[in-house]
Structures are given as structure tokens and as C-alpha cells.
Length: 409
Image (cartoon, rainbow, N blue to C red; front, side, top):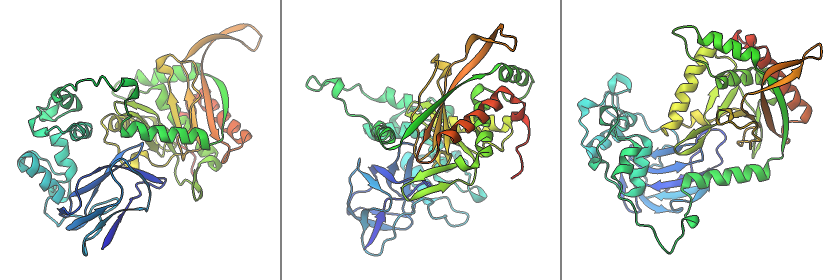
């Protein structure tokens, strides 16, 4: 009898929440069938079977949080355990088994699905794009709604979350259970556990710096005036500056793991994003190496995947620092909580206009933002963090360096 263990999605994953079992004990499955879903505070991963078999025993129920590598189920006979990260490649010229199964279940004609695999073979993701968004599928599964009975309002009739919500009958309120006692959903519960543990276990310390952004604003306006080019936001330039500052201080480009300290090979910067599913932190890899236009394009793709709940494990892995910009909401400052296993997070406040003395001691109107850097004292000392923040501030106050090619390594 073979065993299924909690898979590891990403280098820094230490545990996963079993969001759903798609098979019951005693039920057979075919290669490519989804056996269960693993949810972290970042993304949901569907785990497919690598071969035909029978699910013999489930050791952890839905909703259980299990460490990576722990046995969560057993398979009958000589059945193979599911692939942890990448399902078996289908035979050349054939559609993926999971794709064929989905098309059959939802009555989707093969002709309307554009295959993204080799030689045009249809993959599971191709069918899912036709049927419904990931968030719509999750809501439908939670509410027991048959997607075949839901009319899609998206492109090509694709079902969106709002379509499923519209099809859901409004539940009658329970007079015996006040709304204040409502249980959090699995994503909120996972986020709560992670934030609580981060604040409790990580020895945070904070540094704050006022940064003059007059030159940055002027450069941004000049770049955005160019027709046919990507429109750059302050956050784009912050991510670029953070990437360059981290590259200039490579000793800070590391994370704290249960087994020790891991030095990262590339510079990644996380972007805290507000989504319908809660906060997500996709990570832009090689933020120091990308030109600003390419960085804006890559960030746009990451944030769109965050909003549509289609982030992959690779999208949320790596990075020693994240940026949380609440300036657009009018907050002057933000004292953020580090996103483990990262070492730092930068809180960014709204632009402020105030008078500062110039070189002659006369009042001069300035445009400033307040940066608050939270750092993990297990990894970083105060002086190192101060030097990093000074480098970051210098890049923002003399922003032409953001346009230059990164120094060779």
C-alpha cells in the first residue's frame, strides 16, 4: 500500500491546508484526476494522480493543516501516489486526461477549446479558462452549485464569481447564531494563523525615513508623457528601487527557514495586493534586472493573476522583501508585519506636501512620502537595515539610476 504525503509547493512552504478531497475512501481514480486541493495563505493547488488507483484511507480531513511530508492518505494495492508538483505528461498528440474529463463533465466541445500544449493538445487549464474562473469554481464547489446551470457573463460565456453569486439562493439568517460568531473561511483562517505567528515569532524592528519625491514625480510624468509606452506608477518605481537597493546589499537577500538561513539566487520583490479573496503577495522575480517598461508589464500580469485567483506557486515564491503601498488610500504611514519567510517589508504612505528649510535656511515646499521598513532581527542588524533604507531613499531622490542597466554581477 503506497502513501500520499503533503506535497511541497515552493521552496519555503512548511505546511498546507487540505481544502478539499475530490475522492472518497474506496473510490477509484484515473491518471490526471484531481485527488485533493492544498491551500496556503497564498494559492490553491490541485494535486493530480500520476496513475490509476483507488483511494484506500484518508488520514486528515478537509480543513486540516498538515506539515509538508506528513502522510495524509493511503492508496490501495500498488497504486502510485499523486504527482506533488507537476502531473505526468500525457502521451504525444493526446489531450491531457484531466482536460478530457473536464470537457466530458461540462459538455464542452473539443472544437471550442484552444490547446496550449505541444502540438495543440488541450491541457486542464485550457478547459478551465472556457468553463469558469478559479474563484467561480471554488464558490460553486463550496455552495454545491452546478456550474452547468449557471450562465456566464464573461468573455465567450465564461462563468465569473459574480455569476455564481447571482445563482446562489440567499441563505436564511440563523437567529441562534449571531453574525459576530461566524466562522472565517479557510483562506482568512490561514492568513490569520500566518500573521499571528509572524507577529509573535519574528522579532520585528522598524526604521522610518521621509523621502523627497519631487525628482521621482517629475521623471515619472516625463516618462508617462511618451506615447505608446507603459504607464508607470509610483509602486512600479518603488519595486525597481527596492530591487536595486537589495542587489546593492546582497547580504540582506536571504530568508529565515526552519532548517536555517537561505541565501536567494535572484532578487525578488513582493507586492501586497488587495483582491476579492483577501490579501495576496505575488513576487516579481529579478526586479533589479528588469527595465521599467518590462517591470510594469510583468507586475500587471502578476496582479491580474492575483485578482483572478490564478496565481501559481512560482508567482508567490522567493523574495526577501515585500512592499505594501497604502498611499492611494490616504494613510500617512504604515507599520507593516513581515510576510514569512521574508526578511523585510516596506510600508509606504501617501504623498505629503510640507515646508522644509533649504540650503539657505529658507522654507521650501517639498513633496515627501514616509517609508517604514520592518526587518527581522534574526537576520538583519539595525545598521544594515539603515544602510539599505538609505540606499533605497537615494535611488528615489535621484531616480535617473532607475533607468540605467543594473551593474554586472
